Amino acid sequence: MECEQCKDYVFEYIDKSLDQSKLDSIKEHLHSCKTCKKFYDEEDSLYDESFTDMIEQVDQIALKDDIITKIQTKFHEGDTKKN
Ligand SMILES: [Zn+2]
Image (cartoon, rainbow, N blue to C red; front, side, top):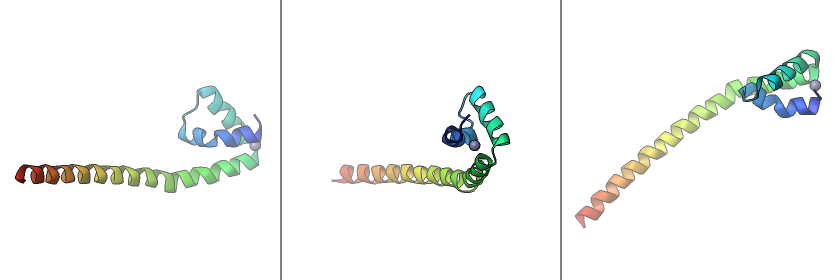
């Protein structure tokens, strides 16, 4: 595998969203290539720290938005019934 190819696949590799043969070839490349290993380590730590946090936050925001929408709908329903 080429370095460029490996870097392209690093995120999917971290996310494990690749097929087994690709995962294996990237794993192999990371073992033999320090440049890509470094790149992978950096991305992997970023993914751990910020990406999972971000997903959690997005989930919470989505949940909040959903609740707010439901509350607004309820209020709106109440208003239209009153008038
Ligand atoms: Zn490489």
